[in-house]
Image (cartoon, rainbow, N blue to C red; front, side, top):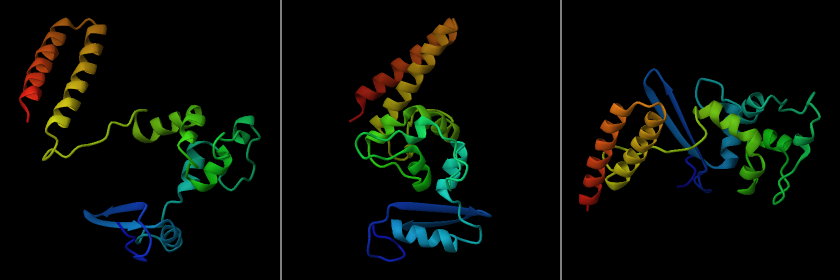
Length: 173
């Protein structure tokens, strides 16, 4: 998908704004995002991502009064990105950064999403086997928690639901 603004580079950022039930979407390249940030996406000022992340990580995004901790000066072994630089850019440098900065990022991810593991979403109109598999996995997790809490009657109901879904899963084409 090309950038909706310049129509030259691939869109890498997808913005959605909903005001009074009016939805406005834009797909932009990295350069146009920077321009739009200055102009603002609509009538509401644009959120500055790196300052938002800095606030969540309790770091000054402009590097004023940044506490001098060893962790902020550690760098990713592959790309050399430091935590302070991540806060300035709002972007990680490579796939290895996720592993390197996990101890600092997981609380941030949990704060934003409510949990640490991304499970994704799936429209109801599609799904098929994938939707059933996800539902079975969710029920198995609930079953495990219920058994741990010794809720054996509820666990039996969950077990039966899992069996029914597994049968339906095996019948799906």
